[in-house]
Each structure stands twice: as structure tokens, then as C-alpha cells.
Image 1 (cartoon, rainbow, N blue to C red):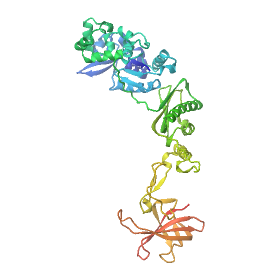
Image 2: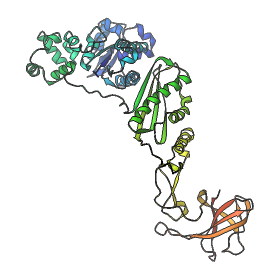
Image 3: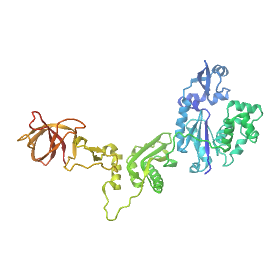
Image 4: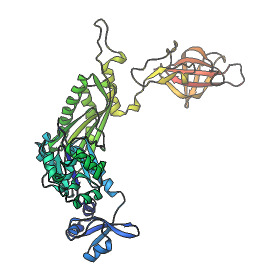
Length: 497
């Protein structure tokens, strides 16, 4: 596909920004100033001041002599760069690739985008109109190369150069349209070369020797003989889909329809490539320039449209469309291989590899939070507090086995002291007091002795008992140390189901 680029020139970028915040300046000549080498220099002018002869770089004293009523404001450091960043992010609704062109421009890679707006002219006119409504004076042009688009936007009288006609458009432009240094432009004019067509057919060796390598690079870039790389402000994800809207979407059903279409396109591609997403982000670009977004995550790679839609549906209510959403983008920043598993007809389904279990966990995690769901595996330790670890995923395999003896479903992080009565010290307890309540024991089993892990720490052993009260509640108790020792203590460590 032939490349198409758009160059946008904000002729009064910073002064337009001040006008938006101080509307009375719209009808007055005003400039921005900054100190340079001990004197005040004009760094930016508005349209009215420019029409009266004020130019950038002029001394402020000279400008005031020409227009006594001239309004003067202090320029802000890095204002131009910040504005270009903001405007570039806003322009992502028109193309995935937007790059800054300091000090007052943007470059858009519009390849394959304009047909969504009905053609090149409606596409570019839409960009210009919306930027004008936002309060910016804009000149823009579209061409096959960045160089021609840049030159036509600033020195031409059209907005769209037809495909393969970029060289014809370049011929009638002045030398400065090639983005040359001021000294080179001045030298060209002194030689009587006031249009590109006057020197474009000269021998390349002569042009390089007289005007330098930078001159030749800009010329061949404009002609399309040398690729010019863009540095987009946001590198588009490898897996993403875009859906521009002819009319702004303001209703929840409209957002759901857009999401459904994006998921179908993205999942169809993932399925063809045997991939599944682990994370997805839905970005909604509003008419007022703001962006709303929601994200989901999955435990296993998935390209199941219905499941992913349900995950997003839990969060769509947080999207505020305001005046309307004009562009939807669905991105999958985390994608993994997804190979369909073949089930043996004599084996039952289920277990940790059951897709339905993973989808259930996804729904719960996206609704109540991923940190509320845990899976544990046995760890290679005897001490109960260390005998398990959190699993990183459903696929993680245990490195050891659970103990043969039963363990409580709920284990306290720190064992709690209890008062115990036993007929003989080394017998199971008959009753114990826990949180002010006396619990009578009906059944007991034990003891199970667990020694300290001497290579980790020194200490007394524990004798554990599984006990059951008269109501059927079961507890895990232990005595710390030997019964014949002068000081020994009882603790509660867990609860059985």
C-alpha cells in the first residue's frame, strides 16, 4: 500500500493557547516575550500583530514603537512541546501513528486511514475543522511523502496532493519548503533559485558539493527516494483494532455494540495466529478530547469473544461518554500462544485445565479484584506456617506433596494463645478458652509432633491435636514444648471445615 502522510502546521500555536484562556486577546494584537542576551525578544505573535508587521525574533522595543497598544505576555518554558504532546495524543483518533514536528507541527501517517472518513479530502477537512473548533489556526496538507506534505502545508495553496503527484506539487514550492537551514535558503535565493524546479534537475554531485549533505537528504526525502522514519508518541500495539464513529456514541448500548465488533475482529485474528490475549484495554476517545479507558485480564490466553465481552461488561458502566465518543480502540498488550487442547473421549473434563474454571476466575477477578483470589501449593517445609506458597498461575505444578495427615482449611497467620484444661498434661485437652468463650471438647485425635527446622531457626517442638467440640466445630491446637517442662503453652493454629 502506497504511503500517505499528513503534515499539520499550527501557525500560532502558543498564542492560540493564550487566547483560549483569555478570550479578550482574540481581538487585540499581542505577543509573547522572553529574555535573550539581556534584551526582550518576541518569541510568538498572534495573527493580528503579524498583519501589522510584527514578526518573531523582533526586539520588543521595536514592536512597541510600531504598535503602542501592543499586548505583551511572558512566554512559558516548554509550552510548545507540551501543547504538541497534547495535540498529538488527541490526533490518535485519526491514525495510530502521530509524531511531533517541533516547534509547531505534527506529522500523521495516514496510510489506510482516509477511507474510513470517505476519502482523503473529507478526512483532512475533518481534522482541520475539529482543530479549528478547538481554537487553533491550522494549515494542513496530505501527500505521498512527509517532505512534500510539510512544504505544501506551509507554502502551498491546496490540502491534498493526489497520489503519485507529489513531485509535481514540489516543483512550484520555494526552497524553504524542503526544511533547509536559513543559510542554505539565503544562498539559493542569492543564486536566483527561487523555486525547487529551478535546481531539482541539476547534477546531484554539484548540489551536494555546493549545499551539503543535509540539503541532498531533504531533497531525496521529499522526492520519496529515501524513507523518513517517524517517532510516534505512542507505539501502537501489535494486536489492536480501531473503530471510528460517523456520529458520536453517547449510549451504553452503542458502546457495547462497538466493543462487540472490536472483539470479533481482534479475536478472529488471534485465533488465526493461534494466540490468546492475557490483557486487553478499551480506549474511548471523546469529542471533547478526553480519553476514557477500561482494562481486563485473564488467567489463561483467550480469544473467546463472549467471555471477554462479559469481562468488559463488568466495567463499561465506569465509562463516561459526555458529549460522545468518536473513536474506539481495542488493544491487547499481553498476548501468549494459545493451542486448542484435544480431549480424549475416555477421559472426563474438569480440573485446573478446564477452560470454564479459568473463565470463572477471570469474571471474579475482574469484578472483585485479582488479589482476592488465591491458589496455594505445598512448599518444602515442615513448619505449618511455611508449608505452603501462593501459586503464580493455574498452570504452576507443585514441587512436593501435601502432608498425609489432614490440615485445616483456615490457618491463622500467627498462632494465638489459649487456656487449656487436660486430665493429664500429655493428654488431649478437655476444654479450652478462646476469645473469652469456653469450648468443651467432645473428640480429639493426636498428637502429631512437628519439630522446628533447625537449619532455619532454633526452638521447641509442637504437639498438634485435632479436636472437635460438642457442636461439631473442629480446631487445630498444639502444645509448645514437653508437658514435664516447667513452662509450656497451648495455642490454636487453625480451623477445619
